[in-house]
Length: 126
Image 1 (cartoon, rainbow, N blue to C red):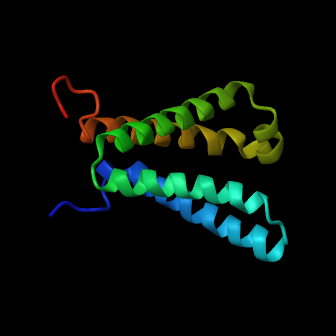
Image 2 (image 1 turned 30 degrees about the vertical axis):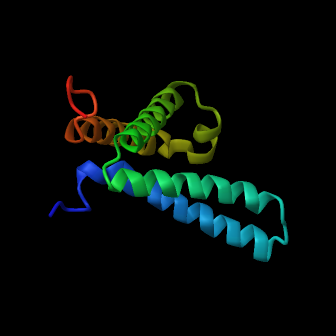
Image 3 (image 1 turned 60 degrees about the vertical axis):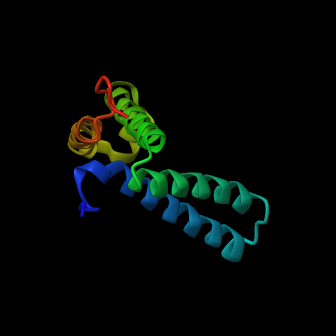
């Protein structure tokens, strides 16, 4: 049996965590915030992320590819934020580089290992 907590499933679990956070945001805005339209939009996002996590954990190639590209875009976002971010730099102050450089390296390595371990870009793989 394959281990569920491994580098092969790293972005699948990240999507599951984001789906859980989205569901909690739905509850918070609906119950505490007394909003009724915003939670439905958040629920759509939570359901999409939950489906990506579910199908990614069950090794659906399309879900693995979408999760990979989400990781790639998140890594690129962090990389470009190192050079051109004003908001993150204002929020983190002196700690900006100490937080963002390791985060960028970690996400980039995780994205590369996810693609490698799931054989996403190997010729002839299904």
